Image (cartoon, rainbow, N blue to C red; front, side, top):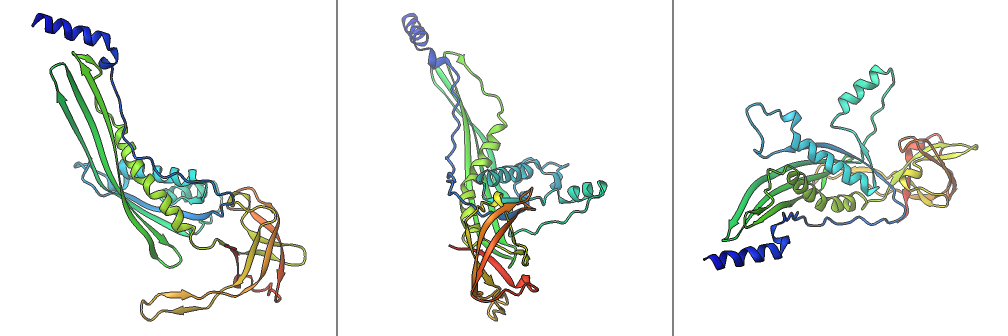
Length: 309
């Protein structure tokens, strides 16, 4: 037995890496969003992100201030913003924002969104597993989370995308001959599991939001200048050409009861000459319009400036 013990000690000392703490975070890489050059941004609001699990819900639980729900909302907002494809609109803290505007004696005009996202954490759990050998032991902390998301077209109220994704993260520590790291409770695993689940849904959200043509409208149409809404932050550059369309007729589908907007008629093109404005919300572009029929400048609401696919 003495020889066996000495032999084991020699192995442990000759291979120092066995006595070191080994940490491994298991995360499925989320889909990467590629830069496609010009990005005509959509206006998106995250309406709600709730925690529908029983995790961390004690007697004093406050549904309106659930930390996991707020955490998931912040992660989704950060991922959508980093894609560079959206103008994100504040909704969760809109009441506080409007209150500050009133205190500062500044008027506030809330911007309408093209799409709204409703999300929830549907599953969440932690577990600890381990195994002990003659000379070594191993402990693993793992977290699993599931996130469900609905993407709603604000103009119709229809859900155009709904899906659920799962994410996981784990931390493993090892000791050999009593030497090595001991892992205590790691709260960051929860963040990583939720972030991974949300990351799997982001590309699908982007694809659904950008399936339909980007649209904008005339701001001004007279002999001095023709302006449309949108500028540099939305990827509009000098030389880009848009289609000028009339609004289509609205009819009611008797089968579903939903109002349907029929396709409009193309009446010309608008070529961007230059852009201006200070913020994404106040940007505009000067355009040169060529039309097949005269534009009724007293009825600008009847025209749509549309991205040519």
